[in-house]
Length: 94
Image 1 (tube, rainbow, N blue to C red):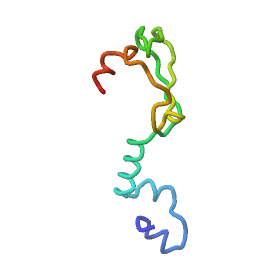
Image 2: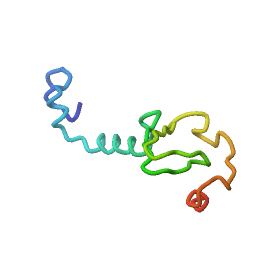
Image 3: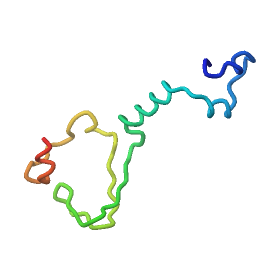
C-alpha cells in the first residue's frame, strides 16, 4: 500500500487506475525476472519452418511441434539419448 497512500488513508483498496499509473520498480523487476527464468505455461508450441529431424524423427515443414515445460524430466533426464542421434550442434553444446 506504500504506492497508494490515498487508498491507504481512505481505508480502501487501490483503484485500477491507481495501480496502473503507480511506479513500483522493485515489483516490476521481480515480475520480469520471474517471467524470464520460469516456465509460465506448461506447453510450448512451435511450427517447423523447414523440413528437419528431431532426435531421428522427421518433422516436415509446417508440422506443429509441442514441447512440455513440466514433467518427469523437469529436474533430470527422463531417459537416455544415444549421442549419435543428436545433431552436431547439440553434441557441441555439452
